[in-house]
Length: 168
Image (cartoon, rainbow, N blue to C red; front, side):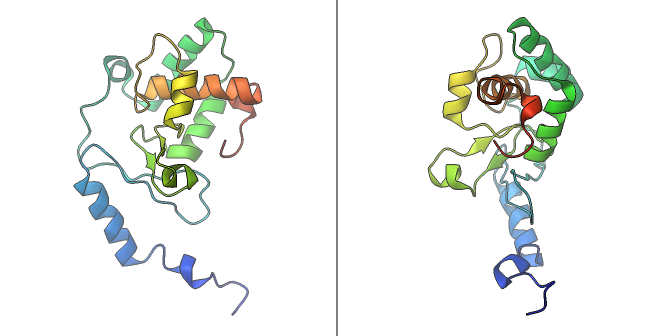
């Protein structure tokens, strides 16, 4: 095998059939989004649903975009003494979900154990419940709640989300 070839198992991940399967899975799930790994990814890479789900909470819908969600989360984090910066949050969000608040990882060890990683910062339900911050929605798909809980977890485990540079 030439040095630049990938094993057969990985070589076919981006075949037409796989891309079609991903597209059909996303289209058929409604509000849920199927996240499948892409070559070299460390987090979930999710496709965008065909229709925006109605599940966003009032707090999330007032911001409406990643910039607003991060800024609102930073405001809540400041009130609760949770460290973190815009750049640290943004970098981790882009790696974990590409900015999709409905991202879900259905392929890793957590998913196989029945607790898939969810949302912008790919938090599993037990971690979200433990590190949920009062004043945010109790919904791991709510962008503001997800960011704030993940940053609270990162603060306890790593000192700050700014210190997280890979899957955590």
